[in-house]
Image 1 (cartoon, helix red, strand yellow):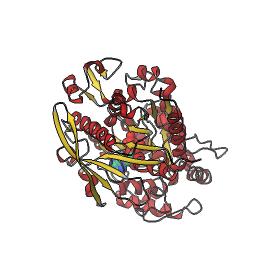
Image 2 (spheres, rainbow, N blue to C red):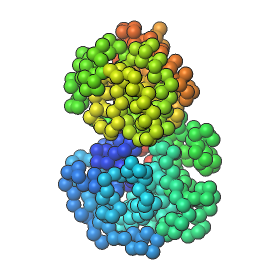
Image 3 (cartoon, rainbow, N blue to C red):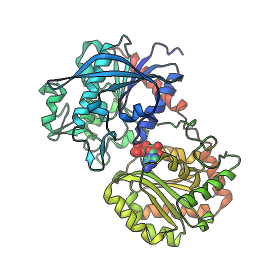
Image 4 (cartoon, rainbow, N blue to C red):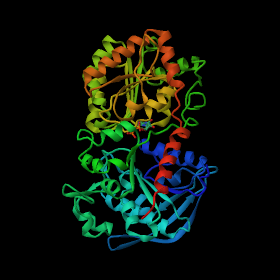
Length: 488
Ligand code: ADP
């Protein structure tokens, strides 16, 4: 198939390894390159955060003559291009007062007060950049609320008539919701401030803009695509999504196995393969030492958690069952995560009696996350909702058995273990409650004590293929379907 004609612009607010707070960055860091390998002519656009420039890649100013309007204010900006060999080119929108900050979206006190300004500016600047290019995209792929106004601006500009827009929701829980007084900054006329447009219960939402104005909407797993059309998961946008049902798609995320594999991971003390798991025991000993846990845990199941600490992730569900887990089931628990202050304090308090069997590391630390993936026996993900979830995919590759709530992408990627047949890749539970979570962990601990079956389950998970190569093909099919449509 000849894909040379398919010109795509991929826009996101974060991309690994330059700037990352969550799974969106992993996707934006890998999907464009996987598409490029499928011969898609793809460019990426990101905000020019301090972290992007600090990363150390050479970059050059390619445009110094562009500006964007924020309300009646004219803001000049530069466009810098990062040069990366054999990768999709990355263009960054560089304006210091917007993006040269210690964090991407906010600090410990909350979101930056001017996130509306920052991301309205970003959307306008990206639109101005695309207008200035002689590269005419056939499809513009926007991601999450930070990019939600771009399909609106494109719809208003006849220059983009031939260009389709795809808006991917990585998490419906972040809606880019702002008060009405900020609306004027968008430069849109009042006809857009209504329930069929951007208005959302007395405020307006950049996520809703993307959902309403783009040609198609996708999300990151088939189950989540169905879930968000229901009141339980729809965050009051389920009606909007149902009204667009025929244009809502669920495409599973992938894993970049060049970055996430125990065979090559240089952050872990010993590499290992599906055929020889001896290195995994070395990784377990390393994790136990690093977290100052009892050495006796070498013979007990160690459960890892790597997560943003947000109510979404259901980490609070383990607090009421902690004594059962540690005292009765004799497990060790390692939690790596930051976020919600109350949750952080609750976990810390609950873990206090269990020194030596409970470690809570409150930071964002990719290296440690890899050591947990390799050193733990199980990875627990009790999410209330989970659009796709990446850590269960990483865990499977590292021979670490996921114990997950069967929601969103976890429902699509983890299959329940049958200890009699040796089939399955993990342990799942249905309801977001502590009792259900405990039942799944009890079953997992039971199977852990059956080493031959456990080994089979590890091997099942390690041989799963969630590569981006596979996932990108599904995006390519959707891109083709959309771009082949008539524009009239
Ligand atoms: P989400 O995007 O909702 O946070 P995902 O599972 O899709 O959830 O992606 C989370 C990504 O962030 C994974 O790569 C995970 O390893 C990483 N991550 C989350 N918390 C931490 C942390 N405290 N330290 C290091 N990496 C983390």
